[in-house]
Image (tube, rainbow, N blue to C red; front, side, top):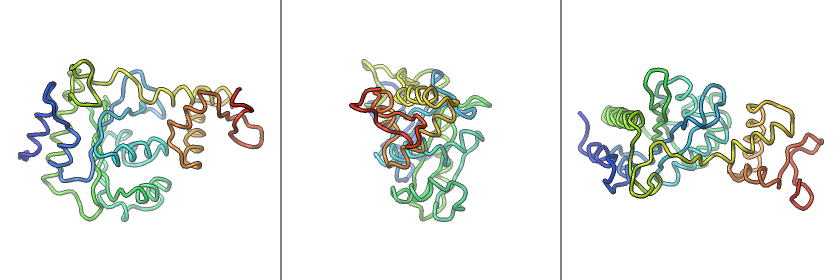
Length: 250
């Protein structure tokens, strides 16, 4: 049976509710964080999966974890998106180190103890992802899983019907916007295209290069992409790796 707290979250999804579904979800599910990402039709496709766009997250740790997965291109979110089934790892300390070699140590440093990712999908159609962060001390309870599946079904229905929650991240003129009409990561797609031309490689390889540089320099992927688009950073293979052109021009 769906909990009373989850019933409150479902009410917050209605346009005009004035509630924050992400914050309500954290309380109802008894987790550390909640995030929802969607796959807009116009987003780029990498390895058969469209690029996720964060819709709402609470607290900021959830957004930082979403960005970490996107930067590294590995983790429970990408695995769940590819397989189309939930990926539950509530205790990251127990995950084999070779499963997500870059993400695991970075997530633990970030303070993420455990994760559960639930695809928002209907058959082969991938619409988005619900991500839950937990404290890494115990497995998800039956009630948490039941509530998470209920929320996933409600979010999937909202995506299919073209409407969704009204909150600070997903509104325009008081009307719900679902999925979002603006690509938060458009600059990443643009930078990927520029790197592809600079290096003469595929878009997939260009994104790998961009992600690798962002991770190695410990910078957000979006910030590095902005430098590429503004021509403050080039990826020409001149023996020195990515570099800043003289005077920021190039």
